[in-house]
Image (tube, one colour):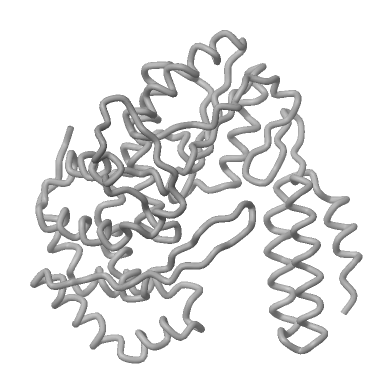
Length: 350
């Protein structure tokens, strides 16, 4: 396996830090933290560069809040200056790891994304009769720091980069502790409960490291199980085959492999015909068509009514309302939703 050294000087260059700031500010320029950082841009970037150079950099505290769609999750936002550092790190090391990822991993990767994952899911469903669908229990709260660091260190042989990674990891320790229910694995002692674990949902680094964490698992499925029909998006993954016996055989192997990563899957997964539809990324995917999940439609109707109320009360302008509606249309048009879009847009009366 090829390893990489002398990466830290690339991370802390002025050009890379400036490019990291440009990425971090995308869609955030109207927010106070981003605007405040930009107001004294050169000073703030030079201060970050100096802290990273002499290794006095310390990440700040997270701001955490809950979202409830599609399910209740704790989102933790790092301070803006720390997000600049996250981008600076990922600018350099993400390409090193991305080229090792399997083609069927679609989350948080350039040229991939939800819509391509949906396309792939539908393509594979036309080739196989059955699907086995999993999601990993408590995925982000369960990610073990020691295992993750071992995986990263196999390719990154730069002590300064590993120091920065440890600083970012340490800043997120305990953020998701209340979201994690202890799971005991073979060989654990009483001190296993104190193992550092958890990646804050909302960090760029967390999204990237989640792919790194499951990379060996992806290769296990493709190379050892020789599964020709596989799609993964973060912690949701699908395995396809032409018979249930094969999928049942894979189930035990998957469970054992994930245990090596200190991860578990929900026990309810069972093989089923693809003709019944595959609930995936907000859609129900059939070999011949796609539908938006009913729960997603109900949620958007409520959201649209709230947006219309805000517009009527003068809290938002027409441009903001149109942007919200257009964003939803751009997403659901990847399904067979002409009638649904028509019905919902008829409710919009300005």
